[in-house]
Structure formats: C-alpha cells, structure tokens
Image 1 (cartoon, rainbow, N blue to C red):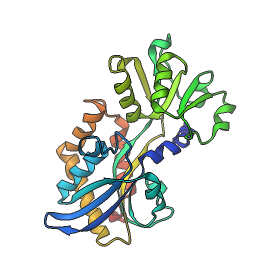
Image 2: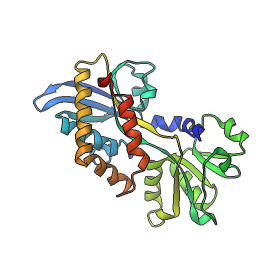
Image 3: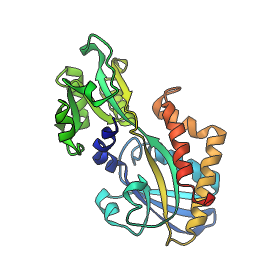
Image 4: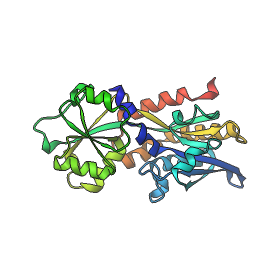
Amino acid sequence: MVMFFRVMTGIVLLLITGVSASLADDEGLSVSLDANDSPPYWSQTMVKDGMCGEIVHAASEAAGLVSHIHYKPLTRMIEDDTNNDLGNPEFYMGNQDFAAVIPVCVYHVGLFYYQPNHKNKLTFNTVDDLKGYKVGILKGTLVDRSYFERAGVKFEESYSQASLFKKLQRGRIDLVIEIDLVGNKIIDRLFPDSHDDFVESIIPGSHMPIAMLISSGYPDAKQIGSLYRKGMKKIKASGLYLQILESYYGAGQVPDELMSDLERYEALYNYEQE
C-alpha cells in the first residue's frame, strides 16, 4: 500500500502554508504566519484557525510567543522560497535550508466506504484488494494511474470532495481515498444522521507530517524554533494537545498511529540533538 502514499501528493498541497516572523513586541517574540485556507487543519472561518491553528496558538502561548495567522493564496506561498514555511517538510527542504523543523501534527490517508451498500465488511491490505472496486478520488491527486490500472483498479475522479462522498453514499462508487480528518468532517457535514454507516480504514504507510519550518536565514531562527519546540512539549505534557485533537476527531477517536508517528518525526527533525 506504499503507492497510496504517492497518490496523495496533490492533496498534500492543500495543507501547505507559509509562515514569517516579525520583531519582538512587549508580550514576547511575535510571529506572523501566512496560511492557505484548508479546513479543518487551517481555516479563517474556524475557531482559532482550525485544528493545527489551535495547536500553534497553544504552543505559542506556552512558550511565550505571539503567533498571528494570515491567509494568502497558495500559489504565492509555494513560489516564495525565502520565508519560513508551515506544512510538509518534503516540499521545502530540497530548495531551502532551515534552522528548525517542529512537527505539530501528523495526518493519515484513509479508504472510506458506505457499509449499507455492501453485504460484508471490507478489508484492504494490498492494492490487489481494491481490484473490482470503483474508487473515487479528487481530480489531479492520482500520481501513478498505470500502477493501479495494471492491478485492475478503476478510478472515478471528481473536482469536489463533497461530490465524491455523495456518490459513495448513493452507490455510484465503492470507495473514496481521502485524508482521514477531512473525510470525516465532510461526512459530518453531509450526512450527520448516518455518520456511523461510513467506514474508514487507515492506509498503512500514508502518514505525513505538518510542521513549522524556520528559515536558517531568519533573525533569531534557532531561538524561535527552540521556543516552539518547548511549547509543543508543554502542551503535550499538560494534556492540552490531545484535548485539541479530540475536539476534531472525537473523544477516544484520535488514530493510535498519530502520536507514535509524531514522536518519530519529532526525533527525525530535532536538530538541537545533533
């Protein structure tokens, strides 16, 4: 199922945001963050800027930082290779040097199906398990179509994530590939009375980090990175971090893989231990 990791390359772009910092103010070091609206991770219409926004604000407060999130078009942030970035480190580290990379969350890709349309529970361990099913996916996010076509997998693309889940419920497609939290939020919005009829399976190996990347050329970059990292440690130790996640996933519904994957990414990007 490793190939599913590549399938989501386009969707990953929805989570990319940029961040830049400013001079210190009376309350502490002030950091101005540029974000692309991509709910529920980042959203100017949600409380405290969405899930990752809440995490950033909480870590900032715990570390004595003041973070301000402003929303800009995604293309402007992708083209800017001199700023601090917030998103998947793999998109930036090949073109820019960073003094600090602080993971704030991990997301996984899920396979969703509508149980009433199937007599038995569906299980998926390899790509061969998808043979014979019609799989819905957001247009432009399928990287290697030939790989799946050789395995006998049929795809139906759509410009709208909501359209995919409507087709899923109506039986026009059998499965939908979507970021786990995004898919669940769409189901909550469209089918609040039948949410439990939708079943999700996390795709093994589909985990990806969302991180704050502080440019090596930015004034006080190491200090900013160190403060954010300490803030993350504080909110995890206090339980606030898990509380934020559960407010979006639901109590007891945070994927088990999320915390363990986050710890691995924290160790991977902890330059302070080098």
